[in-house]
Structure formats: C-alpha cells, structure tokens
Image 1 (tube, helix red, strand yellow):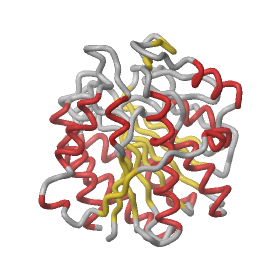
Image 2 (cartoon, one colour; image 1 turned 135 degrees about the vertical axis):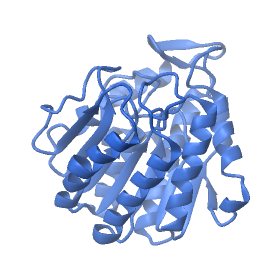
Image 3 (cartoon, helix red, strand yellow; image 1 turned 90 degrees about the horizontal axis):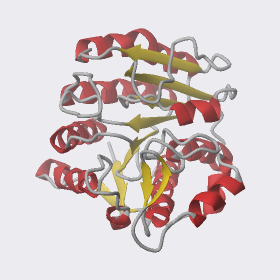
Image 4 (cartoon, one colour; image 1 turned 60 degrees about the vertical axis):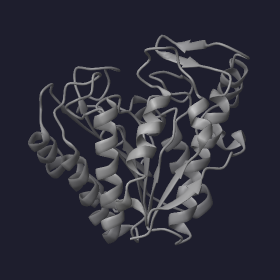
Amino acid sequence: MTTRLYTHEIHLQHVTPAGHPERVDRLKVVAESLAAPQFDDLVRKPSVMVDEALFELVHPAGFIKAIRSSMPEEGFATLAEDTHISAKSWESVTYAVGASLAAVDAVFEKKAHNAFCAIRPPGHHAEKATAMGFCLVNNIAIAARYAQEKHGAERVAIVDWDVHHGNGTQDIFFEDPSVLFASTHQMPLYPGTGKENETGVGNIFNTPLRENDDGSVFRDAFNARILPAVENFAPDLILVSAGFDAHYRDPLGGLKLIDDDFDWATGKLMELAARFCDNRLVSLLEGGYDLQGLGESTAAHVNRLMRG
C-alpha cells in the first residue's frame, strides 16, 4: 500500500490558551510517533494553502468572512465557549483544508492508495454556519464536496469514530443522500447530538456508545451497523474522521478503546475501500487529547493504512 501523510508546520502556530486540550503538543506527538523506523516508507507531503473560496462548497460566504475577520493580531479571540483562535489560526485552517483536498486528489489520481492528514484545528463539529467544539470549518465535509465536484464521486461515505458526535458533518449532509455519515460516539456527551433516530434521509447512521464501553462493544457496533451501512452504500470514496479521544486514557471521554481497536477499525474500512473504491480512503485527524494515547493510536492507524 502507498500511504501519504499530509501535514504542515503552520499547524504548530494555531495557538490556544494555556491548559486548553486542543493544543500544539498534539501535532508534536503525532510527528514523533510517525518518525519511528516502521514509517520509513510513509510518503510525506507538505500541505498547501488553498483558496478559501473552496470553503463555500460547504459554508456560506458570510460565515467564512466573519471567522476570518475575527482573527486577532495578538493574543486570543473566542468564537465559542471552548473555541479559541490566535493570529495564525486562519492560516492553519487554509492548510488543514489544503491537506484534505490534496489527499483526495492523490487517491483519485492514483498517486496513493490512501492518506492520513495530521492537521489542526479539527473540523467535524463545525456546522454550516457555526464554529464550535474547537472547530472553525468542517475539513471533512469540504473534502467530500470537493471529491464530488472535482472527481465526480457520486457517493461519499464519512465514518466518524471520535468519542464526540460529529454534529457539524451531520448538519451539513442531513438531507443529502449522496453522502453517508456513520458515527460511533459516546452518549451522553458533548455536543448532545447523535441519537439513533437522527437518520436524515436514510443516510445518517448513528451508533451511540455508553461510558465505559470497551473495544468489544465498539467492534460489535461497527460490525452490526457501521460496516453494513457503508457496504450497502457502495461508496466511491471513504473518508474517516479519525478522532482518537475514545482511547481509555483520554480526559475528555469515557470510552475504553485501545490502539488495537483503531487498527482493527481501519482494517475493516480498508477492506470496504478495496471492494468499492479502488482502495480510496482518506483519514483526517479530529480529536485525541491524551498525548500518549494519541501517539499510540495514530501510529496504529497509519501503520494499518500502510500494511493493507
């Protein structure tokens, strides 16, 4: 398998207040984990800045302008109770989306079988016109629309295993049968969405888990609901919101997954990508706030992408 890694040093300049869980150290530990010898064959590509007009594939122009104009020259500004920005945050956003779109190009142009984007800020909580949950714009939603607009993908499946429900992604595609959204997440937990009866137009598959559920419960949920939904959808592309805060060490969640669970889930989605998508799978970093758990889980995920 040819796997590409997209990231950029600008993400280290998206600075959040002291003590904030979505911090620079997250990307540092991901980089350290992926510097191990087992990743020598990982094809590393720098992200590129993209034209923010592409954000309008998902978000209204006025929303984008409002966020950009909120960037402080120094210090911090607050977009939501838990969502803070600093001088380089918007630049980091443009590179995060740039990584996502470059990865989509790579798998459709057969330059790679799959790709992982080590980016921040994350995106899956950003709704059509609302920044929240550490997220400014919805990276994975923009990537899905881009795959449809540029590469003619008729059906895009988004699988989200972050401990928090991807309310933003669900909001954007709730009435769009061309995009499937399938999620495992802890409930009750922020942001409070993600019930099983939230089904959109038959394209939304939420599978809530309970606090203290472990990998066996997670795997049962994947086998019973997530994987069959993706299989029945027969997508042209699989996108993964790869949040690693369902790890048992994470301070913001209460699930009990280990790195082997993320390895297993990655492998299962790769099997479906091989059947339906000519192996096309792109994974975007979302949550994960314990540094050891994040490093171990990311390594397991990317190692499986490379192994096939």
